[in-house]
Image 1 (cartoon, one colour):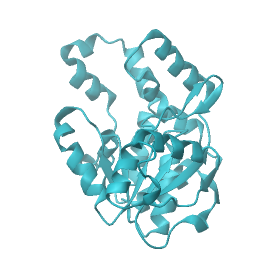
Image 2 (image 1 turned 180 degrees about the vertical axis):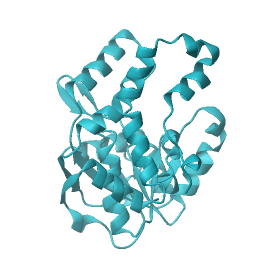
Image 3 (image 1 turned 120 degrees about the vertical axis):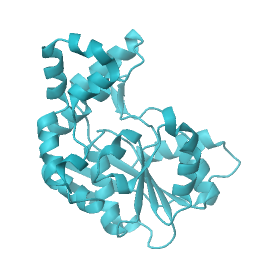
Length: 272
């Protein structure tokens, strides 16, 4: 694949696209800072080296590059028949997504799909495994159709139902409330739900920044800008992944509503 045909991070272009002529007035030290926290040069070098890889092969290259080591428990809980929705807490924002996709992709011969932020669709290696879930912009009308197609496919679905990576609340690092989509769609398409717990954390700086922005009422997810930097801080580490027992879709009956069932599964995850 030619280098000019793959997505590379270009902070200068992003600023020009977003700010137009005003981008020229942004101090160079700010631009340099942004390039540094998104590790523009390192990430682009990796994307260029892996231009010929996609799907699970790309995830394997990510595992090697980030030097991710795993301790996996409960692998015997992965169903050999039927389709599943795999739901996990989201403590990191990088390694957790890569690792779960790699383990499940290897186990199921690549028959997996992530429901992810549409920004990740720009990564050539991940695109074949992704169903974008951006509800705004030009894709908003297609969102229900794409989710429906994903759940009705022959692929297993991987989701982080919180939508954002974990935050520190009252001194405890935990996901925000889970959205109910995985319950509704799993029942509609008769998929088992498999809870997963991923053990890990980001830096104190990340959690303090997220909480400060919340306190100040900043609507833009500033902490997200630092997720790549957090990913690099978490290189060369070992993470524990625990797969729980599959939950039959019939479990999610009318005794609770979908949001309550989502909270029920979230609590199960933190007991694994």
